[in-house]
Length: 350
Image 1 (tube, one colour):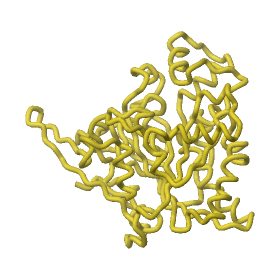
Image 2 (cartoon, rainbow, N blue to C red):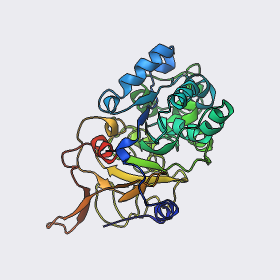
Image 3 (cartoon, rainbow, N blue to C red):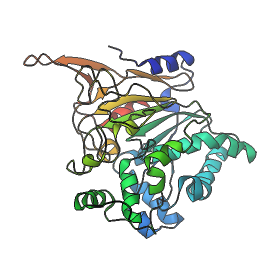
Image 4 (cartoon, one colour):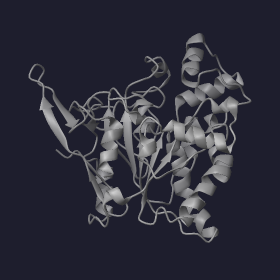
């Protein structure tokens, strides 16, 4: 069963279906997400690099060829780009790491950092007399490119605006580990929904942004009260699925629920940001769980295929299972009964 959205069908039609290279030949570059502790710690460059390595320690660190590390106390279009992203892009270009095409693997706010890179890297490198990176796709786990309503609330609390009741303060403290102040908001400003969606919203680069989305929570559902629709405890589905607008969505698909049940999703995402294609969804995978080595139930496929910019196709193998007691049919990714979301994604790259 191939459940392809109209937008994905158009994208697939616009790209060559002749694979010019084995997907496993593409180096993987990691871009981590927001790290709340850095707002107060304000780490130096060496500490940022160490934190970046630790961020992926649970699974991805040994699967990647390089990383782009950045500090959460700064802004994406500010020092994150000038002092951290640019030097790494220059190094990757000089080493020709992406000569055969790289895949960026991002988590959370790393999705937003990647979008800014995709919009600017070619100009930056060409102006420096260097070859732009050949980025064939991004794998975005729990992507925060659409912002997080928690970011808006955290900034409001930090600036003393509005009414911050005890439930809201508790939710923010669960997420950040503390109540932020106006002196240490950093990239939280970029995570505000309106700000995130205005940051490089239409990059010239036609790189497919392949999405991996969860519907669990590490915070006992407490933060979900402040997020619209279904969420992973930190970002709502409108962001992790790659929807073209923020809203109250219950799935990345119009025909499949997060738990794999095949049924009409009246609040499923039906319009996506340019080049954004949801691939895998897991009802029990939380924001952090998506990149962990812990198995959290079976996974479904919002779509069966996606095509990289070099024409290589990634194809998800699935099986439909009918539950005799209810008659409901569930659409599961083969192997997801024992493999984690990250393992399934990594298999697609090999």
